Amino acid sequence: MEMRFFGAAGGVTGSCHFLAAAGKKILVDCGMFQGEHNLDEENRAEFGFDPGSIDVLLLTHAHLDHCGRIPLLVKRGFRGEIITTAATRELARLVLLDAAGLAMEEARRAARYRQRRGAEPEEPLYEITDVLDSMDRFGRVARYGEPLAVAPGIAATFGDAGHILGSAWILIEARENDHARRILYSGDLGNRGKPIINPPTPAPQADVVVMETTYGDRLHKAPGPSVQELAEAITATLDRNGNAIIPTFALERAQDLLYYLRELTEKHALPVNLPVFLDSPMAISATKIFRRHPECFNNETRHDFSNGRDPFALRNLHFTRESSESMALNQIKSGAVIMAGSGMATGGRVTHHLRHNLWRTDSSIIFVGYAAQGTLARRIIDGATKVRLFGEDVSVKAHIHTIGGFSAHADHDELLAWYGTHRPEHTFLVHGEESGRRGVGKILEGRGLKVHIPFIGDRFPL
Image (cartoon, rainbow, N blue to C red; front, top):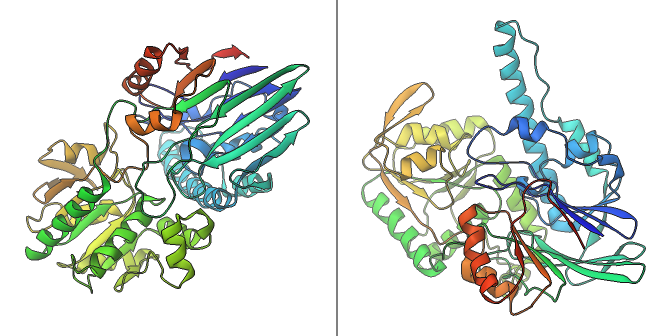
């Protein structure tokens, strides 16, 4: 048996783990590299293995840095089975179609630029037809806690990772001759106290653990004070007769915010008829997918949903799917909450709303998620007095709020709580910057455990 690592590190995310066992080759995730700089070259590079040789791909969840290169894998020869949960299958289709559309649009823009300079156009990383081809590879559906026979001598059990709808950690039990190993992949683990889905179920006993460390060096603010802070920021904006613009991630963050805003209006902490606009076609579609998978909800939300109480149904909620509807929102001068992507303000409809509201002293920009270095969101959070939008300088005079308790990732203490008191033979820390990996690694090493920090291409015999 052998493990190999093809994920990223050092401020760049992208999960892809290779396991050779019982004569089979298995991938856990096949994500797109994402980070501070243009990673197109890295995403176009060879995988480091023959895609046609992979028998099975086990997918932990539908974020792009875990599923984003699946169409490229299929395009380059993968013909095996993809196994994941029902919710992840639907969300992955949505995410990958969106990524393909953006890649094709970017390729068209780049082609015009290259043509003017006499250069050959470059193909997009993959196209919509490649996504549809990859969806044909999705086979059996995993259910939490039920072992699946992946191949002779290999079983996989998916457990609830509590990160986004349908997310999972995966335990692989492999037997090769008389040699047996239990290998646990955490995927991305969720923050406790989320309003819709369950917290992560604890890690089972394993010989080898591969664990994410995105926030291994820090603690999150509790959800309760963060919700109160959100209500206060919106109320202050309404009192000034301004708009509240919330750059929002389409998966999980948008749905959590709708849940919290509904609760706040029902408790009269915000006006009952507060106009809320979800200005993101992807988030709108994701919300519909959430409604189709109440089996992923926590007990309270599932009970309410089964009794006709929609967790996302604000009284005055508007879905603006068409671009013309989005443009019309810029005519609203006061009293609106506008949620739009992208969450880091690197593009998308939120940039137009920032252009119309960032310079206004009566409006607010409310950041509710992680903002990587180099992004527009990070520059605003760090105190920029001017930013460049659509070829012009825009003054930053709006009230800027950064609310840190809505993270979808487990923090330092939550990662260790999931890990528990187990004593595996080896622990591999992945999917985090150096400080995050070291933050968790130091604690585990203090327990006398063997900890590894792998990099791309590293191999470990089991």
